[in-house]
Length: 84
Image (cartoon, rainbow, N blue to C red):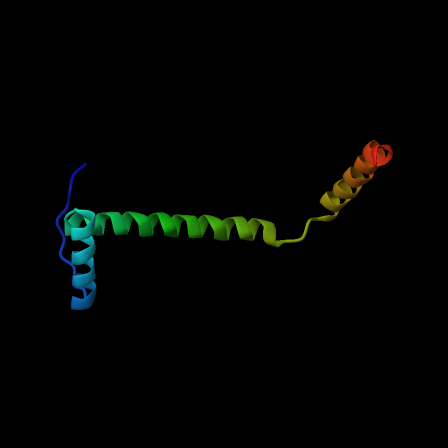
């Protein structure tokens, strides 16, 4: 994997916190920023996937699906009706 150098500007307070965390984790600041960015990107992907899932299930079932669900519940009741 090819590494790219970049420069970023951040507030001193945030830099100091990152520096302290990097020392605690015993990694370089560069590695800490890579870890943080990877985590953020993964979080954004998960967030997008959740939005897509929620969108897919947001609509009410159509008439055909409602009918199939009703018939399935009726069939289930007939099958287990005598077991209770």
